[in-house]
Structures are given as structure tokens and as C-alpha cells.
Image 1 (cartoon, rainbow, N blue to C red):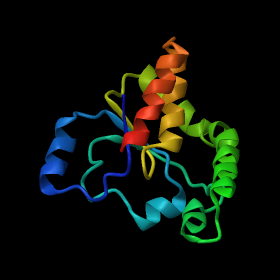
Image 2 (image 1 turned 180 degrees about the vertical axis):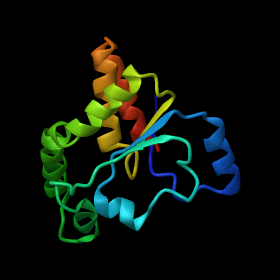
Image 3 (image 1 turned 120 degrees about the vertical axis):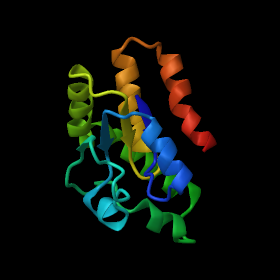
Image 4 (image 1 turned 180 degrees about the horizontal axis):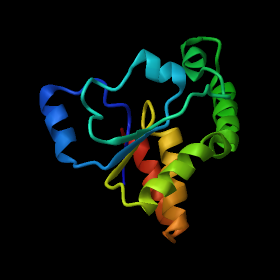
Length: 148
């Protein structure tokens, strides 16, 4: 399993590296609006099982909050904590799709959202926990997204 952000700005070499991954499937956790605004580059998903669904985020537009100078750190922290309370339920169809793809051997599997952090990280953490990976290792793996 691989995780990442949206590969919309890959260079020619990046596209070649993407192809060499030998993916069996992609689970795209982005919203309807995110996919419409930045679709997968033409040809990148050819021959792959590409899963997505139409939905809107329930947590509102965090980018608007980030750009608003009146948004303080406490308001942003509260918004993020609230979003993590609903993210697993909001992504339950993607979680089900992930397990279904793994069950039939559609691997390697790429799971992505826009940044490859929150939604993707939560879904991947669920898989690691289901596989019996110790919780401290799951947390450490999730925290790697802070470095990108």
C-alpha cells in the first residue's frame, strides 16, 4: 500500500516513475469538487481500477479559515479536532473499498487525497491497526506526513 497526495502536477519523469510503481488500484478520497478542480492527469489511471465517490466534506473549507487573518490558532485547532472526530465515518466507503481491493489482490494500492495527510493518513492507520501493527508504530507512521 502506498499513500500520497494528488499527482496532478507530475513532470514527465514523475509520470514515468508513477507508471513503474505497477499499481493495481487507486483509491481517491478527494471530494467531488476537488476532483473536478484537479482531475487525474490524462492516461495516469489507464488500466487501473480507480475508485472514488461523489461527496462534500462535512468539515467546511479549511483553506478559507487559513487565509482569514481573523482565524486564530485555537479556532483552527478546534476545527481540526472536530474534523478528526468525523473523518473515519465520512471515509467509511473508502475504507470498505480499500479492504475489498486488498482482498482481491489489487495491489500495490495507492490511497490518495489532496495533500495525502488527513483523510489518507486516517484510512491507512486503520489498515495498519487492522493488521495488528502496534499503536505506537501506527502513530509514528501517521506523523510522517508532518514532514512533507
